Image 1: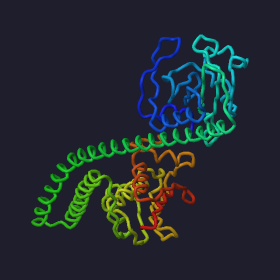
Image 2: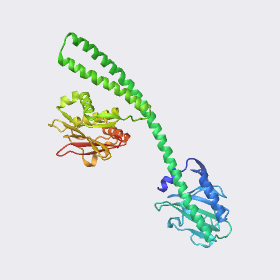
Image 3: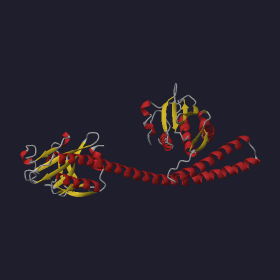
Image 4: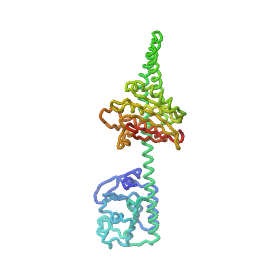
Amino acid sequence: MSVGELTRDSMLSRKGLPVPGRGLEITVPVPSERLQNLVELARTVCGQPVTAINIITDDLQYQVATAGLEPYLCSREDSMCAVGFQSGTSTVLEDASLDPRYSGNPFVDGRQGAIRFYASIPLVSDDGFVLGTLCAGARETGRISDRQRQDLEILAAEVVEALALEHRARELASALAEAQRSNALLAEFAGRISHDLRNPLTSILGYVELSQMVAEDAPDAKIAHYLDVVANSGQRMLSMVEDVLAYATIGGDVRPAPLSLKALVADVAEDLASSLEASGASVDCEELVFSADPVQMRVLLQNLIHNSVSYSRPGASPVIHVTGERTDDGAALRVIDNGKGISEADRGRVLDPLVRLHREDDPPGTGLGLATCARIVAAAGGRLEIGSAPGAGTVVTIHLGSGS
């Protein structure tokens, strides 16, 4: 936890308050009920007329809660609490005007106030960072007992905890809002993609059906085979579009089912038949029965195998091995190729959206393929790792959890 996080994010609402001597209005946090209760309790404990919780930044002190006065801002150079708060030790003065550190302060010498009794307890976070102070003051000289001082120090620790809780609540609220916004955008995007792809796919399948009818009158085994491949791939694509739309609109519900790795890779290879054939690529797969979401696993493997073909080494036909094995905590799938590989320095960042390496002879792309794969694996409760294959190439390992 840093002072920046607390000062900027822990308060949920704000209002304009005056800066003494400047005639300015600057936005500062409105105190939460818990902080207000703590500062009121501090006033009762020490028996002084004024108490305040101060956060001190590089250039300002602002009061997030006060009892006995209206909260205000002041510059750090004018702040009494900023004088020694970073030492982490408490300060108690019967008469601040007699202490050379404070006697010339505008809140002591009459320019802004005439404080005499003064107590300041540092607000220290768990990692030792001093955020500000819990302070008490009065226009008359005074004193507090050792017990009162200890109670103020206990209250200061409670103030730090309250600030931390509000900061975490702010983070959770922000994360929830971002997730809701992201889901809404995903649903909108999936709806557009579904609409844009469904119509041409339906048209393609219609013409394929007509072609198959014509092929029955003039049989040609090769043409009939090609039409079957196109029809099967088109049907799977249409099914995938519908499934992606359903996935987005139901909030990303993952639906695991028993899967055959070999059958899944065979479907993907058929979908990618034209690019595999054009590149002279070979794909082999070991069998493993595991549990995962069928749609997402197909998208995952299609992306990885397509990458292996797209990023092959010049002059070397792509050779792709897909393996699977049971592990202590679930299952591990691997896609191994003999392509260009990914340097160790780039293996983390290529999993981020829109990141491309821009190497010589690399094909054009969006930089979303591996990011999509990483997101699919994370949604399944697993993790994705990128390594190097023996000799040359890439190994992408998909670790799936115990439910697989």
